[in-house]
Length: 281
Ligand SMILES: NC(=O)c1ccc[n+]([C@@H]2O[C@H](COP(=O)([O-])OP(=O)(O)OC[C@H]3O[C@@H](n4cnc5c(N)ncnc54)[C@H](OP(=O)(O)O)[C@@H]3O)[C@@H](O)[C@H]2O)c1
Image (cartoon, rainbow, N blue to C red):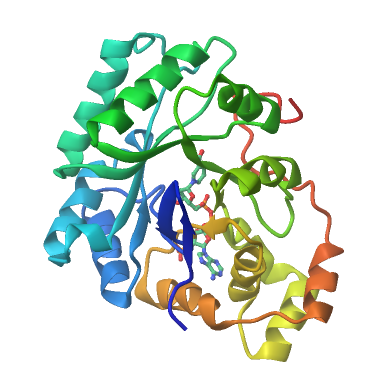
């Protein structure tokens, strides 16, 4: 089955992509090249990952038409320790440096990587709006915004936010965010979608995998892909796991599977750094 595509007036994006953190340098470039060779057409990077250069090099080396690849990057911005980029020109400069590292003419999706209590939200939205208007970022969005903060950003109506990227998987629901994104045609991009391999040990997921002749990782990804408006970006360094995750697009879970997976605890956040926002906000 081909990779399903998220499509709305705001965004067209393959619903399965490749995460690239924490790969660096030649390993990262080789991994992205392998993924593109397997058919991946959605790649996720960020300024903070330190791998925009190898990701861009892999995209250029693949020789595919640029418009066949969906590339996301993120500006590391507005956390407590970093205040230097708190104005529009430096926001723009941070983006320009990323584009230069990528060696590309534009990105498909630009996100602010994390919010912070000291964030100047109107300025961030103006910065995203300007980059979207320039065409250098075809779409813009935010990552790690809790629902309350996303609602505030949307209420300002400065720029159409096309996506939010957050941790989301069989152990962590994101219903409040989905209630905001779905009616607006925004995508919810799920990071840590195979819970960094933790799903391998889960008896419920293993049983479902066995029933379908699939793997636990594929079950975790198929669960996400069954949710309308959701995309997933599993990171896998090597070809075997990349192919395994890609094939999750072929796995259709039945009602009994979905009920069993719905019964797993849904409050299992794994990414919660000291600068994280109040997730309940
Ligand atoms: N916006 C943010 O703040 C944010 C935060 C975290 C992550 N992300 C993005 O989301 C991507 C994915 O998240 P993540 O890397 O934290 O977690 P993840 O994709 O759930 O897990 C990746 C880890 O699980 C292993 N793995 C991959 N597929 C597997 C499978 N089918 N079965 C078992 N293990 C498997 C990988 O190992 P191998 O590589 O050795 O195969 C890797 O160690 C990141 O790479 C990054 O691009 C964004």
